[in-house]
Image 1 (spheres, rainbow, N blue to C red):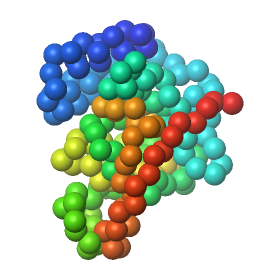
Image 2 (image 1 turned 90 degrees about the vertical axis):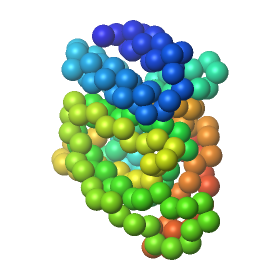
Image 3 (image 1 turned 30 degrees about the vertical axis):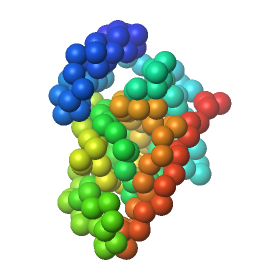
Length: 183
C-alpha cells in the first residue's frame, strides 16, 4: 500500500460513516495493512528530539477533518497525561511504547485520575488510542531505540485545543500541541 492509497482509503471511510467506533476499527485495519507492507517513512520523519517528543505532519486533510502524523520519542521520553478531543488510531512503526490509560473524568471532576492499566505496543501493532468517550492517557518510549508511531486523528491534531491532566488532582489545563518541522 502506498501512502496515497492509505490517504484515499481513509477518505473513503470518512465519506461512509461518522461513527467514530466504526471509523477507528476500519482505519485500524488500513493502518495494519500499511505497516505490514513495505511502507517506509522518509528518514527526516523518524528523527527524535533530545528535549521532547515530536509531531511531524504527514497529511492534513484540506478541511482539517483528519490528520496523519509521525510521532517520535527518544528512549525514555514520556508525554504528560492528556486527551485528544477526537478519535485516533496509532500504529507502531519502530521501537515500542508503553501506554498508560486513565478513566476519563467528568468535565467538572477535581479528583485524582483513576488508572486503568498499561500496555506495551511494539512494531507493527495498532491500537485505538482514543475516541471522544475514552480519551485519557500518557505514552512513554521504552527500549533502547527511538519510538516512531504513525498516528491518524479525526482532526488537525496539531491545531486543536486539547486537555492536559494532573493525574494527582484531576486539574485540567488546555493546550495546542502544534507541529514540528523535520530538519
